[in-house]
Length: 360
Image: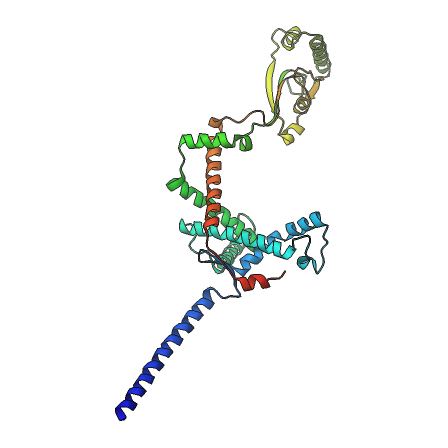
């Protein structure tokens, strides 16, 4: 009887120890989860990496103005306390902005995951990002106090710091992948150029003109009034001869045997430059074969005749002249395609409860 009682006590003791171990393990696991994935601080995980609710809220904020504009233009919806929860057609602003913010957050997290895989970023958590932001702002503040040069803003916001970090991160990832996995050969670059030249490599709109110019400045670079009158008459006479059928070159020689006719190409897309040049402005409006009026610019008179005009889209930049740009575009395109593939294959776990309860 005593033996049976002893065995029962021993079994109860062993069972108690096992229960205590199980409870302890459960509490430790629960504590670890609450520290890394508390249900009220993460909106989703992407391939095991957390999208913090603050990252989601940042994406919400980034899409807010565009979403208001969309519903105003499509449904004439006005802002009100009920705007976000009001259905318009089969769309609700709150649900649509949550969907877009989640997509943007997943896209960002995939880019961060790739950067971590390539050794560019070591910590892609939100807490790590905030800590780095605080350190960077503190560094900038201290540098300003010490009268040191600080490039960029004196203090970053979350949005501007994220843009800065991810811009540098994407560049580093692309360079790393190009050196190891994505470096194209010449044929791959040529194939990319041919496939994308109508989208990326249009030659600018240009006009080619013949031009004849006469200076009316003296040896000291001052305006000579008599010379100015005389030279203008010469060009007016030349213009009348051209209009009567004489060639531009012959009309120039009639002024002086050594008169030089030059050709000039003006970029019609260079609006700022053209606006400062009367000759360039005049060339924009000429049709092929048409002759300008007499134009005054920088101490000279000009007479120009349009030779040919190429509108944007009729010609393309030569591959040899833009090879480095083609290489950059090739890598940029490959990076974006790869990111889209990673998003398609990503394992996303949504925190359904927090997502459904999220309000503006």
